[in-house]
Image (cartoon, rainbow over all chains, first blue to last red):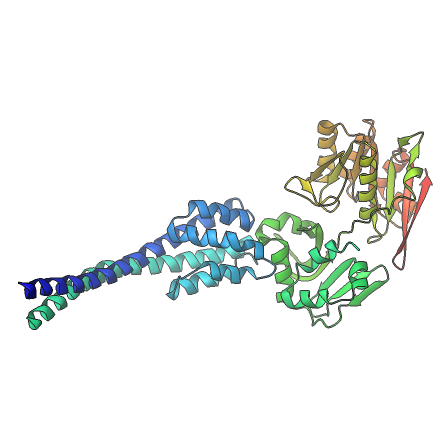
Length: 166
Length: 290
């Protein structure tokens, strides 16, 4: 009885490992969607009202969802160091633990924001948003396709390993 | 020594250049009136005696200019388009950043030179001339004139402070924010307890708004340049308010050649004229009864 219980727990543990991997894929897809949304809001505000950056990011900190809102809030909190540090450095730091191609894409945007006129900023925003949307679409597909695969595979590996151990 | 203005200007410089500027001798920092950044040249500072390179500083690059503008606009160059069209930005601390570059339809681009004008508050600089601006205890409309950089704005600020301190209601049209450096409704410079400051509004509009809204006894305005400014001053004079204005010009004859100023002078709007002479950093003010 104990052996069966152990095997079931072992299988469950493997399944959870697969679920964790699938959740990470979904989280990345969600983060990318939030960044796309942030880009849309940023573009709208810049094109429509062209507010100064502190005002802009104070507002985005309240309106942008999830990761976009967090980045905006971190950036807003650090803007008092402008002059001591370049805007691009503050921006890069505000990206936090964002990684992979999305970090590179966002960092490239930070090198244009705050330093050039509205037209250049909007052009850079468009490039960034398109790239993020591509990444977001890809991440969603990956999350759907590989998510189930990871869960199924890990459950199967757990089950087989349990049987072998029994 | 009041070196807040110098530090406010230095705060806009990139780190390495700022460190070099802050290592300048104290006397030079105190006397410094402007910092000059020209691409490809060594940054310089100017005092009353002329322009000198900042010791130990390397040549100014495009990156240096971009970095200063980023700090001056709080990383919001896009929001400073209108100011850039006029050729300057007022940065935190009342530092006026004059810009030079290539003009396009949208404004200036490819910035080549920057001039960081350091605001100064010199208490007592008007003490010698202040009594001469009154007649029977009433302040006379006064025109302050001098070439650029001689200290018109500093003198205007001090006169506003003195008048306000004497209980005179002064309305200050401070379009560029250089006189009072008002931010968030508070003035960084002391312009007196009876002074109302209108910042960021075109001078002509500000004068009319102040007349309608604030019931001033004296209307003060810095750098009358446009015909619209002169027309607004003429209207203000007809409303019973005394005027205190500054204008670029070496002397009264030179100023009189400008049609807008000629009409003001011929209308007898001003009854006192203060000229400032800069003799290698020493300012000499003279009052003339018109």
